[in-house]
Image (cartoon, rainbow, N blue to C red; front, top):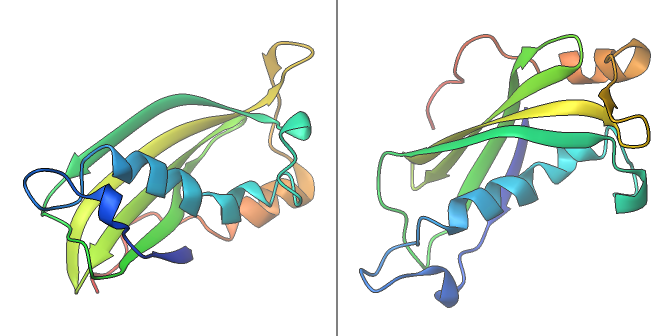
Length: 136
């Protein structure tokens, strides 16, 4: 599992005084950089071998400015060419949001999915957790 701390900025808040719901997909994407480095260590977009097939975010509690948010990232499913990334956003010991993204290992030149094999598959499997991680 990867963890990353995000310090909310003032502009992340909305008129209701909490973190705007549009920020969580962006924070989740930022936290996926650790996982992306397994594919492209320098994060060069010209070498990008992934496409997103699905994104969902479920909100369970408000998140607030002035308190760091911990994003936890792991794999909940590892298929032949696609995998599901699960992510939680925790603040002050409380789950604020959970997200799931289905990513496909993809050859942009050929326009087709590519099997996840060898060392790459082994590296991904190290972050595979069948059950939701324990709470904070």
